[in-house]
Length: 195
Image 1 (cartoon, rainbow, N blue to C red):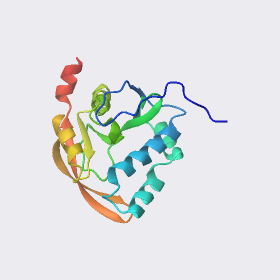
Image 2: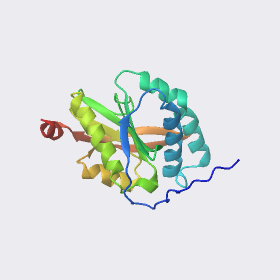
Image 3: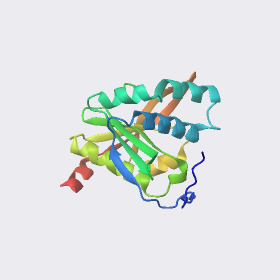
Image 4: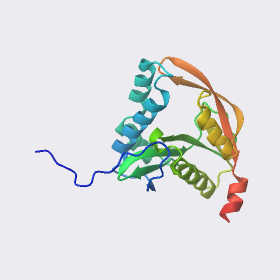
């Protein structure tokens, strides 16, 4: 028997502000994170990376058990954003990956992904604010991240927050090897704001 929705929600376009909930992840969020991780990776890199590379990356990194294990690791913090109870974006703050040259006091923003339809709605900004606040609250001095060099909108977004290139990293997707810029932000000004 089909269910008919009395008042269907309108599908809004790019940049339309939406009420959203941003919260830290916990038990029961692994399936939503795996779906969201694969969907946002596909949406970001379809037409940029070959299909086989995308599939290999998603099989390796975006499955529920991996996210569950990640959430159980010490010093890994994941936030998810939901619109009408549906996952639309997430961010991961964690110890710096060995592919990034780091210094004492660094923590990594490993992922900040948002479905394209929700870009320019304030949700990306909310995720970045959460990541910065988390890093400062934990006492870190610098937030670092790697970014695909062809993702100009993401690079501009990070630069608006004061991130500057601090190096490069090698990043493998499937059989392809990329050299991505590493961006870093000094958190001393953020720490002053928090006081």
